Structures are given as C-alpha cells and as structure tokens.
Image 1 (cartoon, helix red, strand yellow):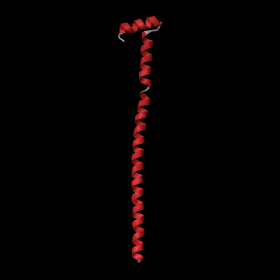
Image 2: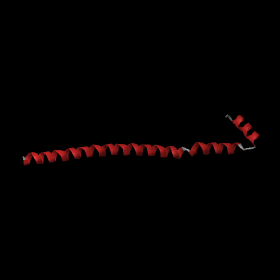
Image 3: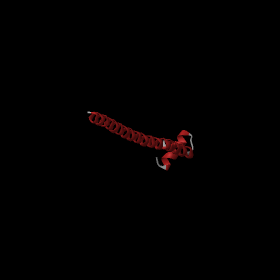
Image 4: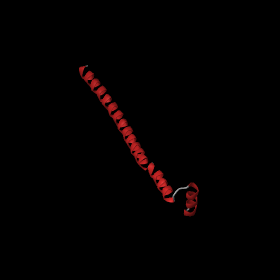
Length: 78
C-alpha cells in the first residue's frame, strides 16, 4: 500500500498509521531469528551427517584391519 491507501485504511479501521507500521515491522522481524536458527540447525545437521559417515568409514577400516591382522596371525601359525 502507498501512503494514501494506508492512511485511508487506518481511518476506516480506527487505527493510526504508526500502529500499522509498527505491527508490520514486528511481523516482518518476527521470523528473522527463527530463520537464523533454522539455518544454524541445518548446518549442524549436515555436519552431524558428515561426521556419521566419517565414523562409519573409520569403523569399516578398523574392522578390515582387524580381519587382516587375524589372517596374518593365522598365516604365521601355519
């Protein structure tokens, strides 16, 4: 709305233009912190997935090393 339309709307509703502007500003800024939190949460979730994949990779490598060590020990025993 332009200023004239806003002033007309305010008169019809029995409000002040300043009230409408402050309400609009409050509504526009209400989700600002939520958006930042959502972005941070998404970043943390991506990092958690990355760490989980790295942990799985290391667990597989450790299991493989353990198997090779056992095979090596059995081969030496033979």
